Each structure stands twice: as structure tokens, then as C-alpha cells.
Length: 267
Ligand SMILES: C[S@@+](CC[C@H](N)C(=O)[O-])C[C@H]1O[C@@H](n2cnc3c(N)ncnc32)[C@H](O)[C@@H]1O
Image (cartoon, rainbow, N blue to C red):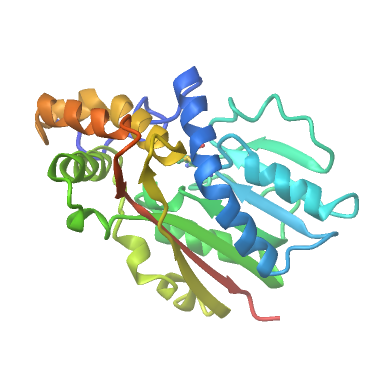
């Protein structure tokens, strides 16, 4: 198939206004928000902070941040596609259509906190984006980056499921340049930018029991199915079996991990 890595996230690879995408973002938030919130809370996000939420998706973390920073603070939630953010009417929260690879810093810069979850790994220019984000921090400001990480996939005890998840990994790499190995070096990219107080942790949610993680991966697999078949990465039978497993309340496995890294701009 031609056109490898010529596409972007929102070129009908993922994203878009459909109900299935809204459900996928909702399931993602159900799985990942508790860990993101715990990390942000432990890092001291507080009233009065000025925050940037990059690639905000459905805005669940932006809404939590807006409640946390309260009246003295401010949250800017950006996305290249704000379709799932326009209904949000939350005090102290501004929604901005913004391409993080090339648009100028939002007017509210510099920020006390910049948070991006599941965004940079999907952008081939992720190192340049990280340079830009680091430069938008105020002295002492905090950056938190979350990324999918593919390292659990190879050890799956369920061959069809492992192959189907691997096909998601490969098709995103081939179409939009996603790199699920980038985060394995965390917190290296933040150390490289001379940030201090760096740290990292990994969230490895269970996928199965027909839980939100299983729903999220089922919706992702269904969305990418045509492209996976166009690249002939796995058979239709394998995809059907993986989808059956994801719908089976008795099935449990691990899919992608979420690697989380943080650091501060020196004061
Ligand atoms: C996997 S979703 C994650 C959504 C949200 N951060 C979350 O974790 O629930 C990736 C998001 O990044 C956005 N995105 C993709 N490319 C972008 C870009 N160049 N600039 C800003 N946002 C982008 C997508 O539109 C989508 O909302």
C-alpha cells in the first residue's frame, strides 16, 4: 500500500466526530484518568495554576484541572480537532483549536503545568514538539507527558490477541508515524532538555472482563481494521478472534502500557 506515513492522526485514521470515537475517548478516560489525576495530584497541581492540556480529546483531564486551579487559575485545552470539546462550559477553561506541531504558544503562556496524554507518540515531529512545550513553561513550571508503550505486547499468552494488538501498533507506525517505543526511554527526553526533578512511572491496566480497556481496544481495532487488512498485517480471522476475546467477560490480558514522565524547568 502506498502513502506510508503521509497521513496525520485526524486524516480519518483515528479521531473524528463519530459516536464511536466519542465512546473510544470516553473509555480511554475511564481507564486512564484515575492514574493521570493521581500523578498530577502528587506533583502538587494547585489552585491558581495556569495549565495547558495538549491534545485534550474529550477534555476529561482539562475539566479536572479547571476544577483544581479554581478561580485564580486558568486552563487552556487545545486540540487540532475540538469537536469533542465544544460542549464543555466549565469555569476557568478555554478551548483552543491548535496544532501543537506548528501553531504559536497560546496567549496564556508561560504555563505552570503542561500535560499531554497519548499525543506526542502519534506525531513524527515529537522531539521538536517537546522542545516547544518545554520552552512554554515558566521557570519552575512542570511538564507531564503520557505515552502508550508497546513493550507488554510481545509476551501475551493469547496469540490472536497479541497479533491483533501488534497490528494496531504497526498500522499506526506505517500510516501516521506513531512510535510506541519512544516512551521506553522515559524520562530521557525530559533529561535531554535539562529539566529537573524528573521522574517516571508506568500504568499497566488489565484489558478484559469486558471492561473499559477492552472496549477502548475493541473500538480502536474496529476503527483500524480496514487499514490493517490493506497492509495485510493479520488475517480477518485473527481480528475476529481478538474482537471476540475482548468481548468475553472471562478474558484477561495486558495490552499497551502507559508510560508517564515529568520534569520541571529550572527556577
Ligand atoms: C489518543 S487521543 C488522546 C486524547 C486525550 N489526550 C486523552 O488522553 O484522553 C489524541 C488526541 O490528540 C489530538 N491531536 C492529534 N494531532 C494533534 C496535533 N498536531 N495538535 C494537537 N492535537 C492533536 C487528537 O485530535 C486527539 O484528540
